[in-house]
Length: 355
Ligand code: SF4
Ligand code: SF4
Image (cartoon, rainbow, N blue to C red):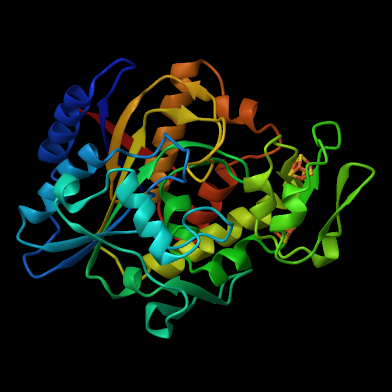
């Protein structure tokens, strides 16, 4: 069965006011927030952007969405879980500080931020999935305990999944650090020796002692690697990449983690994708991150599979080619969507409603 995906166009060069106007139109005419009840506690799942990243959804856009939630009389918190790799979002205190630095203050967005702390037992919950690859998912409890979920995602390229949108934001984004490791654990990076300068930053940051510098090149012992991706994030030469042969397993794990989060949220979730500032890599990327597509617009749907497929289709249509395949030739992010559809998370078929 087809799901509805609502869409408003945004063009390169539209200023903040013009984007806000389109977003207001999307929310008003699609009525996608109408499921929210006065007594609901709503979680707004976002990505605050790694230090140095500029692709993330802006606070002034979040303001429109948060005002829409508050207009229903509900209470809400902005939230994201901590990261696996060693950036500024590794722990709750630094993560919160970075969110403020990126402008996500209460004055700007109208609601407070809550960053669950993996070190507190009360902030973590195990959810039984019984999936092919994930039996039990470790999720930040906040995303399970809340009554309703508004998932705001930046649609862009991704090293592991070709592209990232709503499902990536939920499956990987709501997992605890332990849960993120479970999704990455088959994935050891590879070193591109021609790009490696032997600076040693990766060996210093590696928590598993899996890297040595030999003959001025980084050498990785795969059996020691715990897949935390810290070396990828820290390498100034982009000489570290994910071993993409194991990417399909990661995509299926992300889908099974998405199921863990969403199975208790039937009828109480909406997804909003921003296909603007479309970069080659995700918002965890704090380094040079080229834009690969023009701005396309903003999507809203209750179906995470449909909204990601519609975002993928319209970005590629604007580029005249599969830009994500070009950016990440060995990844096929549609495998994530197909498996999510198999799990009953949504439909690849959609009706696009242009507003
Ligand atoms: S080699 Fe493995 S364990 Fe070490 S930093 Fe890289 S991903 Fe993490
Ligand atoms: S951080 Fe990058 S450039 Fe430096 S030694 Fe490691 S792989 Fe090579």
